[in-house]
Image 1: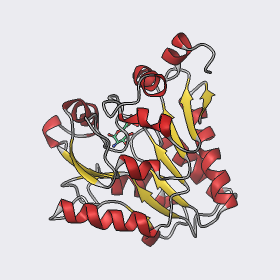
Image 2: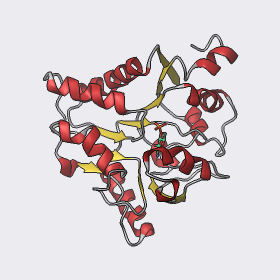
Image 3: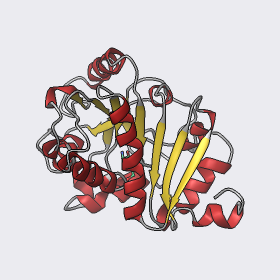
Image 4: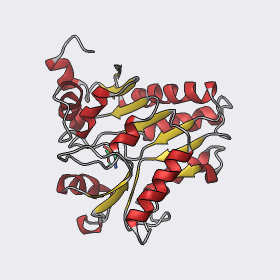
Length: 251
Ligand code: GLP
């Protein structure tokens, strides 16, 4: 079941998304959170930090597994997802860093690292909620459009469109890693709940395609329509614009 929470602005969508996570952490202080990077979840992380600072939330017993990491970037490279998680969330809350997990982008043998990460995910005993952004081409995690859905952690070649999109964070396009390790679609679909955050008009087309078009590995996010539980979509007005135009009754 897909539930769309519509917000006027990106800031409000971030607060709505934080509310979803906060409810889970309050109900289950040792929750396992599947986390995401990119610009979409930043507002949510800010709001979670604010609630922690007000004493409303504690992450002391929370465990996390992140979706993905660039191959070739160390955890202290300022564009690595490990660095992103520290500087956008972990450094500002009471989480025990040894309970946080990401694939190791510097692993010499990516296949062995993928297998290790599968073991980490399995050892969590289930992810309570998986946070997702959505790529311009419909990718979730770094599962790029393809002719098949993956199950486990896998090494992917990033598409030109993803490298273009992510080059805005790097000094030049040729510094953007060309590969990543990502949790597979099957692992994402094994979470208890999914929270997809989509912001801005750049996501409007792909969000409509994902939520209303055919389910196909060519649009990886479309698989969420087959999710067994609740998919909560926190989106702002701009990201919902094409859905509103084509499916006026949906939101
Ligand atoms: C990256 C990440 C994805 C993220 C996507 C969208 O490629 N691997 O997990 O969802 O970008 O990023 P943004 O939220 O910045 O639009």
